[in-house]
Image (cartoon, rainbow, N blue to C red; front, top):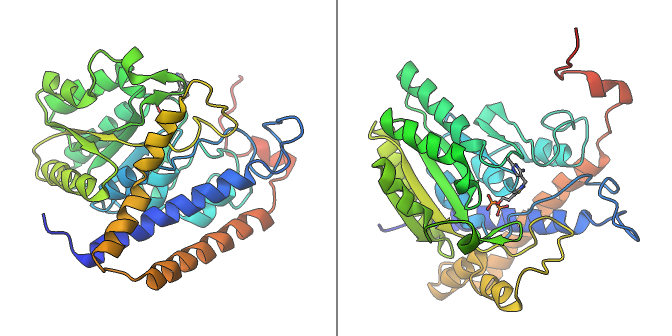
Length: 331
Ligand SMILES: Cc1ncc(C[n+]2csc(CCOP(=O)(O)OP(=O)(O)O)c2C)c(N)n1
């Protein structure tokens, strides 16, 4: 597939935006959390799972989606949220626990919901698959042409929900795309210690649907296979599974000492950085000059810095607001 210069640059812009955003959050996260690591302290309370190194999967897939299409994700999901067009101001405020956040600061970084672009996620590993199937059923019943994308890690693909969801989506020919991000690790458990096959994409065969494995070092490769899956879903031909080899550049969560990970493994990830790979392609093919690239990066940095400042300056909710707009059990 010939990919235009314009599309390539737009893929790069979003990938760089995600990278800068996450690396900035990664720095801010440690503010106020020392000398003793206090997870509740600082501007970003709670856990933080960053997707640095995995940008190509989100950008390559979401480039084909419309606002009506749903993306259902997991705990490591900022990249998909940004690529899907979630309101970044409100998302950042949410991550900072502020009243101006997507859920008025109640959800935090693992619970981002933006109905305007049909984006949702949760910290329950494996929950995204059946939820996306639910969206697929709705689309089919309504005769609508929106589709659903379920995102999960290779660890999540060992949950029963993954298999149940593939089965129903295949049986009912639902417009669902299952995206598995294989970053090799489920916290500290390597894929070969948890998964009977080396590729989850092979598991698609058991359900009679297409399954492809693609190297996420190259966003263009992801973009191409995603286009096929999206076209298939939109044409009523049913679900597909895409497993993307991605490279986790940071710990499972911020504060993870990564003692389970070898220096070589980390180096391998760094050498397969999809942002650097695309940058090199853009320069080698003379699609941008060094100066243009820097200007583009500066503009993105300024945009993100301004958004982060907005989140910092936003107010925290009042204590009594904790009980507003939540389900409360009882009589
Ligand atoms: C149902 C459930 N079980 C366990 C956990 C704890 N947990 C959080 S992340 C994680 C590993 C997920 O690995 P993977 O799906 O490969 O995603 P990655 O973190 O590598 O992106 C686990 C077990 C959880 N959040 N939900």
